[in-house]
Image (cartoon, rainbow, N blue to C red; front, side):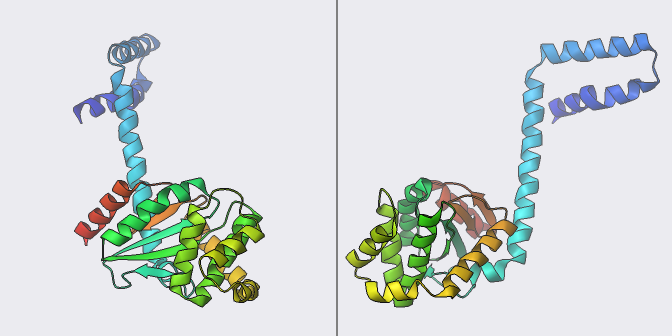
Length: 243
């Protein structure tokens, strides 16, 4: 804190105080400031770290307010899968895209966390942002939900483990391989409400400043990007401790 006060004094207070000084005095002060910084360049790094932490804290506070104001559509939109423990004390929401490599990378960690922690309420938000193949895959996933939560989770798992293109024939083949009724799926995909629900998720993501996948909301914390198992678990535990 003392070092940061010195940085503030040198960079901000001193120049302001020097406004009423003569040119010679100003030059002398500026020379002293320059000499101090050159002798102690680490103070610039320290000041930037303080600034960065303040910005992070401000973003976290803004995110908490956003999540609180949108808790209804986030946790009970009427169409997103709710898995884990519906009455869990911590809610984990994932925005995902089946063509997203980082989503696939996060998948096993998310599954392991849900399996190991019986008090997590887990919600999947279909958020296809990587083109038409992503959109069709998410529409198919939402259509499988009409055949039950188990069918959806099996489909979600199979899609996340698939490597390669996800054209329509591949998506339908994967669905058949896990036991989904393909004829029923082909019919349900056409339901215009599915496309409308995906648009609602887009709108929700925009309000949360989520533009990429994966993105996680853990309690009242928003994480825009990939997290490994250990980091997910740590945030869940922090949320639980905060109550």
